Length: 228
Image (cartoon, rainbow, N blue to C red; front, side, top):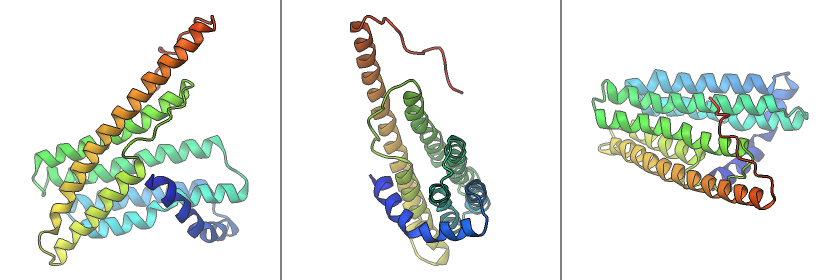
């Protein structure tokens, strides 16, 4: 839900900037790569040191590249399968860096093994949530559910909490508790979303198999062609 409305709003806001970059000869792929590099640097340089406020500022500046690159491609009429693949792949890299940065903090100076494990779970479950939809669609199923927590919700909740928690370094007392709360919320929400998507794929698969059997095809799904 958040992804739908936020993406539409920021796409309109960033359209002039995307047009400016195109006039300067910048390619959508370059924006994708630079944006991902900025997010990874912000997460892995600042978060492991506990500098959550500045890390969030840096990440926020670069995370909008995820909207700018697609906007540029549409304006230039050069949308492609390669661009979509590159964008989705690097989204996973960026997400991994963000939650990996949290995990490194709690494994080190944050000194909390439980929250380190929760951060790792957020990282892994976010990747698997994305995979379930992509894999279901690759075998011809609609996967007609988004679930409780999509990528936009995971990022907004965790980054807003991290940025606010970082204000503790500026003398705001007690606010650092927001990050653990957010990580637990993302972990639970991701687990629920994973369950929703798995149940949906199972139902759609059974319906497709039943329709195929009634049609006399007798075809089975491509169970052996596992993606890596």
